[in-house]
Image 1 (tube, rainbow, N blue to C red):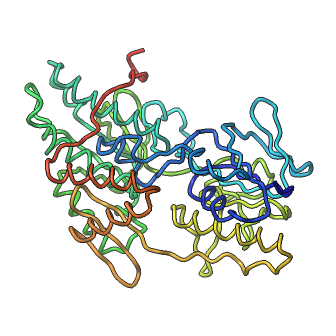
Image 2: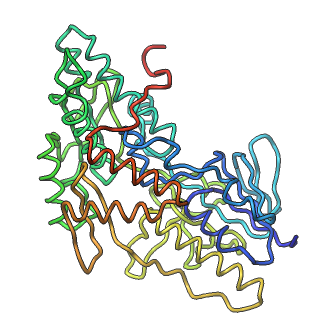
Image 3: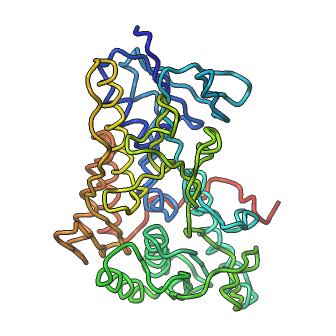
Length: 420
């Protein structure tokens, strides 16, 4: 076992890529995460909307490194960093010494100063978030089937998604298809196809990061699914009774937050500058300023591209950063010059709208519609880890496409928002 110790905090795309790329290097690695699984976050919304089971998009981190004796995996929560002593501080008082530290701690949803909305408007960043949203969506239909008061029934059958980025658009499309296609024949007292799906966007268009023509296509696809899109007014309050959009109150019992993200407190741990979303501002080699042996990558880092625009917080960017830091570490240990500054290679932007519509922007080519949906599906299957999970997800999608039946509609956990 080598003496040089690399500590990686976070088992997401960036952390795993780094650990994989350090295979064969003269180092020992400690990978710390507060959950025992790696999550394929791009498909998390499909768990929330009953298309996929949790086991199809998450895998135990330890299983990845069972044949790597130089890798130690710890289930623990990091609460700080002592950069002078070269130590990571764990909840419970333990410390882990490092020679090189890489923080890949990700991000969570942001409520723009209204954290009190989180209990009634959960975001979508973890498996727990996804199963909470799935439970609330399914329970809304079940409770509406029992409800005799028309006003209460209408509120139960109203679903509001806040934020029209990829997550919000994908959620709105799938919930609409669930209500209009999958459920109608299964209920007797309600017409699920009359459920209202409201998508709220404070800006002027959906999928603002995409080209305007692709955004316009997505808007038409959502409207064809019956989604009610509200532009230009922010959400001003959320409660168990409903949501206020601008000055208008909408009775609604299910709210999902997809409007923003906030980075982990890594910048605070290191006492370095952060951007407005709390991401640590790093140099061109992804190092924390003034801290030669600490790197910050993924959603935790604020990195600028050559044209001055920010590197997006998406999985391919995190993987590229993990790969880059591995090269820097290996060059240092080999006594070779470090590679040049980190350069992000954008591989395209993708978003799906329902079961058979999607948009893809590769820069040099733009796709939309049915063909884009198939390309989107193949791309996601390719990036899944392991043949077993690729087959499982492909089979689930094929079954849903043919039968129009969602395969993960079990309500298995207790609702904790209102009843208790």
